[in-house]
Image 1 (cartoon, one colour):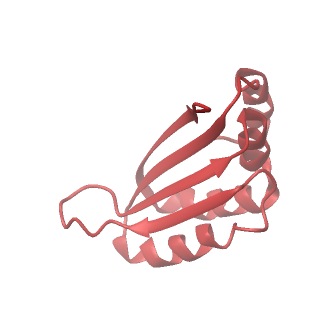
Image 2: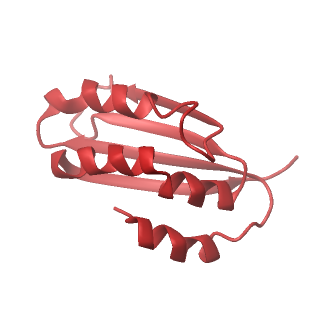
Amino acid sequence: MMDVAGAGRLTEQWAYHGGMIQHIVCFRFTDPADTQEARTRLTGLAGVVAGLEDIKVGTNFAGSPGYHLGLVSTHADREALATYAADPAHVAVLDWLRPRLADRVAVDFEVADH
């Protein structure tokens, strides 16, 4: 997981190239009972965290083994994603999540302007 210092380094890496950013994360918890609390905390970032345009968080209903929770967030550009990553409210949620995670995978991609 990224720390606040890491977010500063990534700001250069994530320099603006144009287009909206989709940030997708899947979470697997050590104890699946933490899924609902994680969903509540992540959803609570809406309207609070700088750089966050939209956030959707949902539990995996597929029933197959794997990840318990998915997140899709939208950011205006790479700079906004870096701002989101370093925001204290976001960092506080990460601090709560880290000890509860068995695994996490993230993908960030730019949505081309059409």
